[in-house]
Length: 168
Image 1 (cartoon, rainbow, N blue to C red):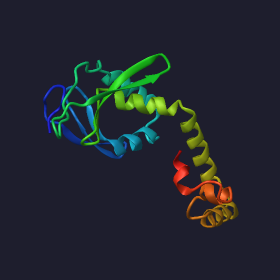
Image 2: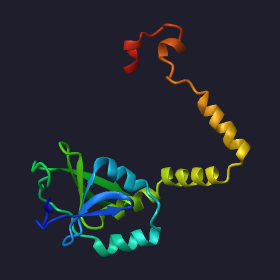
Image 3: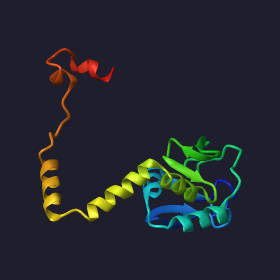
Image 4: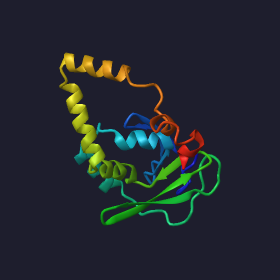
């Protein structure tokens, strides 16, 4: 598969434990949609290392629509906004692939790390690591006792709603 920006052959690498294809010339990366989510929430690399990667590999956004390296369809531009900055990611709906220009994957991680969701995740991980055996047993028991299916509005409100109305 060739780079959609500079046409050099993409190399298979692992980034944060996720298989990606990387261009050795422009430093762009091709990632599956599920891989993007996994990379975004990883906390393996220190923030300082991500910042250095972002600064060293940062490339200007590709302005023209590029073609997906797999299916050759035009990729759509998705705007990412964060505080006072913005950049675009190119995505292929057909192949579920996203193209990140150099430094953008590290940038996505830095944005996530500064979010409330990341801080909550870190706090929950800390609590899980420091949980007593008794509390862990109680939590596992509580989870096992959760209903397997969420109650419907009809069951909650005694038949005032039909199941077809629930999506409205």
